[in-house]
Length: 125
Image (tube, rainbow, N blue to C red; front, top):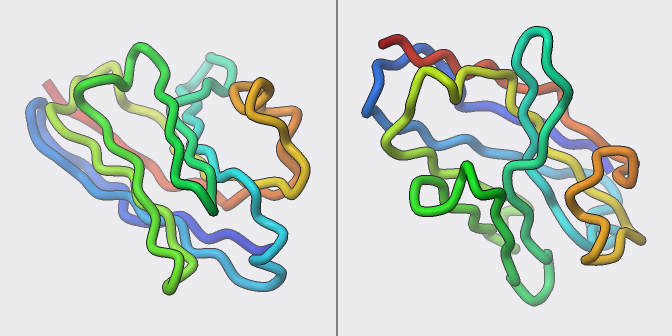
């Protein structure tokens, strides 16, 4: 599976962005798609994830009420809507997927085999 993340940019606090993660290749191997982010000097952290077939979602506490994950199965694309952005949301955002990951492990980056290249989100105050 190949993933391509895009849609990042430079915005002001309070603005919105929609990130996209387009999948190609063995897309039938996708079981869960997750979004992670990594700020300079910090570890990669879980943001949200969605089950590819059933659509179940889960969010990190930092993403609840502001971020929304969704998918378009026909387009093999997962979206991350970022609302009410804050300067602390500044990071490179990555999407990832795996064919075998279990729901209880979706917050762990090491459990994902396939990663997109990341897209930079910068929020100015």
